[in-house]
Amino acid sequence: MSKFIEVTDENFQTEVLDATGPVLVEFWAVWCGPCRQMNPILDDLSEAYDGKVKFVKVNVDDVTESVGTYGIMSVPTIMLFKDGNPMETLIGVQPKPRLQEILDSYL
Image 1 (cartoon, rainbow, N blue to C red):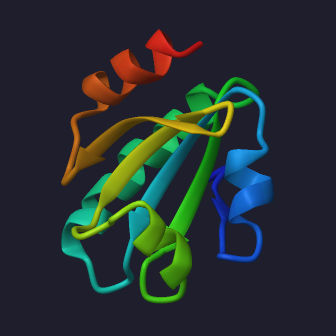
Image 2 (cartoon, rainbow, N blue to C red):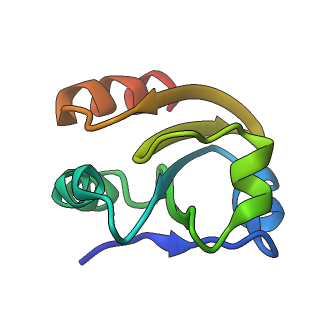
């Protein structure tokens, strides 16, 4: 069961920037094949890091302000925020071990 929160322009500040600790943000789109490839990896990670890392999804077709603010040009784009600051940006399908390494480095 996924632990992702759907984020909009209206709640991006509260859910991501005001959150304490690491927040993994996936910028995605319904029509994006590579985004679908990332789903099982991110679902597994959201379970494994439950209570340690907050996981949120941003649909680039619905959320324009945040997409523009962070210069999202490709999906999937995964950004890791910590205490409101963008720390890492990864574009495209990412292997699970790479994501684990990054998440562990911010815990």
